[in-house]
Image 1 (tube, helix red, strand yellow):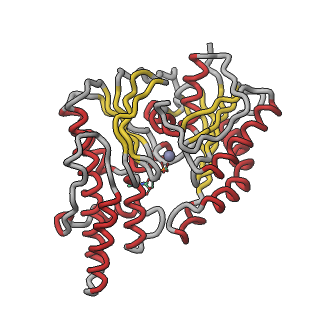
Image 2 (cartoon, helix red, strand yellow):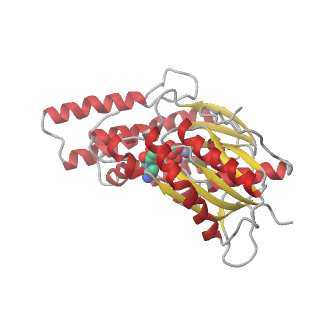
Image 3 (cartoon, helix red, strand yellow):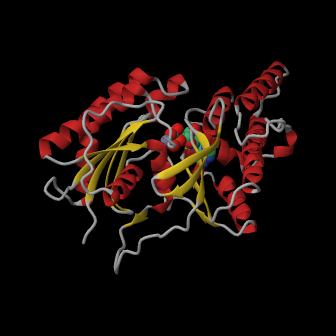
Length: 350
Ligand code: KG4
Ligand code: ZN
């Protein structure tokens, strides 16, 4: 039997996203980015995000249906991100999804945004020809989610059953790159620009501290790297040394500092647990240097390494929300949520 066709919505942060999915298959994945709107604030401004979601949600959903070549007659269920995320932003997606589900008489499926990033590695494009072959992961797996809002290690015991083994206690890794990038005048979000510059820079020119080595947990902390950067940049500015090459070298050193910390904790964790696969998701998963480092670690540990097949699935998107909803419907075909409240701090493990 064909898997249900899902219309999914995500408005957890600064992207208004809608997608059509069927199991692991992505039929369309539309993202209306607000990055330009938030550029002048150097970060996401919640009330601005809410207004933009309000303006973009309807055309984004229409576009997702159009690109998939589907109409409401074809859709079996509506899925929406319930949390974690910015409360005013989540509210717009939830209200609109509820309204659509009611109007078209479809079940409504609430999804955890982090679970979306975790299962984004199982997404696949529609095959041009031939039969669709689903990915059948070997579990347990360890999912590393690295984004602008989250940095965590999640054990995937089964699809739908997770344990958070470690997480940042303050800033997320992407947030650290964005905030330091702003100090360097790189624009928002700075993560991709830091990566580009880092390729040409000398990471040995600046030394970054390795945080939390005296703490036995697998938690991380990126705010110290930010404070350290602030101090260094101020000194460079005072001495009139913040030239182009210095910024380039700084990006290389910062990126190295952030990834070294993440990998230090990851390797400690891998020594303690027994898993079969290593997964990488979230906006920072677009970073090729990070992928290369993790691929190597996966190989050494005899683990299958997975990350999303396109960068449209690393950053926030609704296709990953649809994939989660597909699994939920498969487990419980009568799933139906009532009165959805947003859950801005919803953990994947609860
Ligand atoms: O998953 P995402 O779109 O939003 C959140 O849920 O936070 O992640 C956005 C984050 C931003 O911090 C952005 O700078 C970072 O991902 N990012 C990158 C790269 N592309 C996006 N960081 C490093 N290298 C990249 N290529
Ligand atoms: Zn995200």
